[in-house]
Image (cartoon, rainbow, N blue to C red):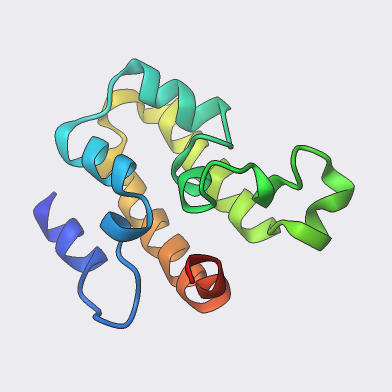
Length: 118
């Protein structure tokens, strides 16, 4: 698991999971519990992607789908859904399955949403 974390933080110019989503990074390192799995699977505002968006729900258009093109991000929504599906499928042992999707999400974030963190 440490190999995956090193990969997430390998580049100096990009935000790592630890910087973008510190609470979820800590949870992934220490192990996910049932509540974490439920959040990943069912609550886009408080999932990994939600933390990156500062728990605003903005990436989902504040839960109003027609607003997504104006204030949200379809790709972020898809990443959150994919992480949720992995959590549903693998339960507490999903962390290693999440890392490839997290890496793709971080790549997306660092190319499309860097202005959000400024």
